[in-house]
Length: 285
Image: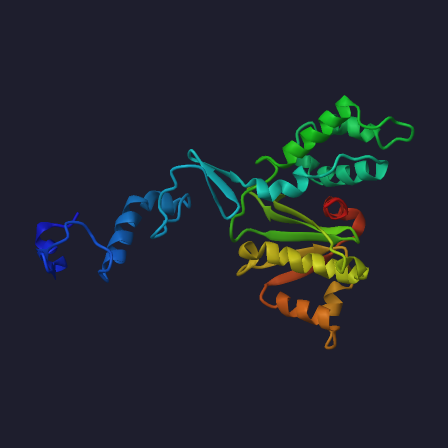
């Protein structure tokens, strides 16, 4: 509300007479500053604790809402289901190799899953020869692990400024990526899972081009998280860094190299045996 002494400064004349505002109106050059100062005072304690950031035109979300990959509802904030889609849609394995891929994905994060060995035991049995596939206990273990992998105990919310890594992998069928960040426990936790099938043209790429494609499309997907802060790209493609430093590149790779320039990244090569978590997402997108 405006004080009586200041109402006169908002007066305006129309054919029906002269009027004054009794509340802060839109249009005054000082209105945004006054409003923001008032809101900042109210939220000062929460702002200092890093709990809230006040925006001029976005202050209260009274019902379930999705913003930047987060579900905000009833005073809680949790990851959006879109972040876990790549895990939740993982197909039910029908071969030993598919079971091994799924266990490679979940096993990478086993240190965060209580009683992981016990839960995964029915699936581990399937890796043995002459074992009947997907009985009730096996299906229950498969669904339970997918559910756990999609929950907050494993999947963390993104926080700007923390140590961040992007793990990628690709094959003829598709490509996958996991965005990870260091949490309070000093360990890397997943923030976002991604997988996508290759199209007809991409299936013709050689293995190196597929690996670069996975990196480029992952950067596009996670651009809002990665721009403006240093991060590490982890890949099993040993030639990536050396190739990107060459003066002469084929047209497609040259275009991709230009897209990389807006990011502040470093590359780490890891053997494929240490990349099973993203290998699984790339093979079953």
